[in-house]
Image 1 (cartoon, rainbow, N blue to C red):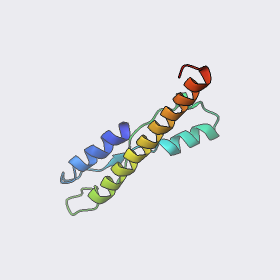
Image 2: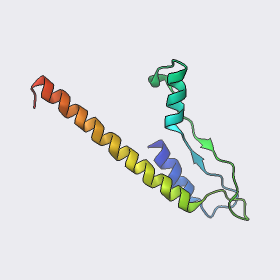
Image 3: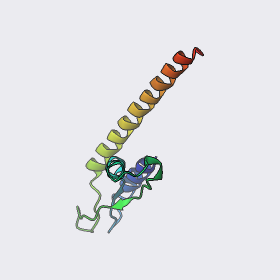
Length: 98
């Protein structure tokens, strides 16, 4: 949800002079936490500003890239929701409540 909000905010500001896009890298932060032995429950996700300039007014938003990121984020969410539903069905079946 956080990434979706950031990406849509980036697209909304595609014509705002000087605006710099933000994103969050969930996979990278989780991998770093696991390598350091930190519990995934203790990971705090924070937006990162991507300092770049793609237009003469100092705006750093690439609308095509942001749209692709939105699509990727939606597909990732959909896949994870399907996996969670399948796991729940397996547990219900194992408990005989299905």
